[in-house]
Image (tube, rainbow, N blue to C red; front, side, top):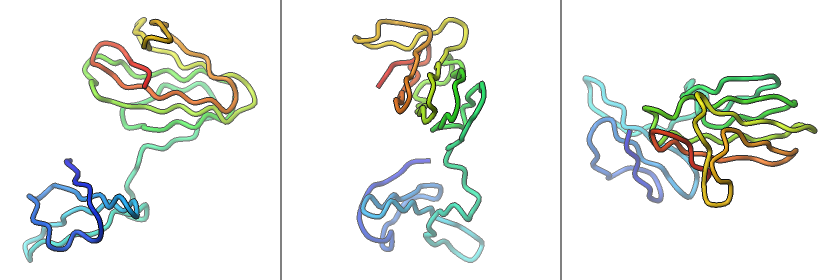
Length: 142
């Protein structure tokens, strides 16, 4: 789904069906809802059952491509999904525990940039977080 950033309500915007509008001032995301009776813009809310990919984990966990932010509440290992075929997938792992959290990769893939080199795992101390993006082969720390 494509997004358009702007201000105010989406009234007056003429976007193809399936497009969305994100209000950068209020963090409201609007979608164009189309029915046999016409179309209108409606705000997406959590009450609509939309999963924004935020999960809280207290044990070892294999992150899924549906996840976006993983809040970790205890010492554990969080394993990223394969980077292969998931180019552009982004994940944030937040350590809110009092111990260390290991962010691991699949099949010896790496999490790299100029400062980290190319490790296959990164250890997060309490209150640290890690943002990564897949390049289709490995992960890059952002």
